[in-house]
Amino acid sequence: MKIVNYAFAFLFVLVFTDSYSQRPGKADDRIESFKIAFITKRLDLSSDEATKFWPIYNQYQEELKTIREKNKKELLNAHTNIETMSDNDINKVLDDWVVFKQNELNLTKKFLPQFKSALPVRKVAKLFKAEEDFKSELIKRIQQNNK
Image (tube, rainbow, N blue to C red; front, side):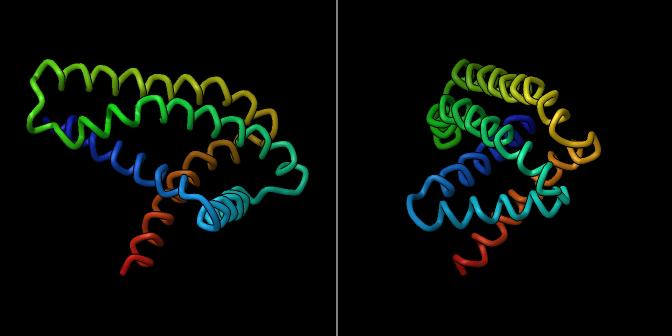
């Protein structure tokens, strides 16, 4: 049962941050600017590295968004209705979640060589930590703004 709780907690954060970043207007621009600045600073990107890196990263993010959008509705429904779902339905959701995670992993594997061609390998390794740190910082700021 722990894996179900972890899966739904992850999906909640994923959907929450994705939904928040989908709001039109200035919030989108501010979040995107903050993300670019955050990752650029964390990776200590030179202007040459940034010129090579950002188009690849933006394409990666677009494809990741497509994968997430495809699964968001079903996973949110499962999160909301888990207490009333049958065991068979929960098993299907878990199987779908594994496929979703595999699709994310496959996408990362697809883009990893491109990231390595644009950046030194140490900076590529730092990228994934920087993304996690960005999500945490964004959630922290959202919570502070809602107080």
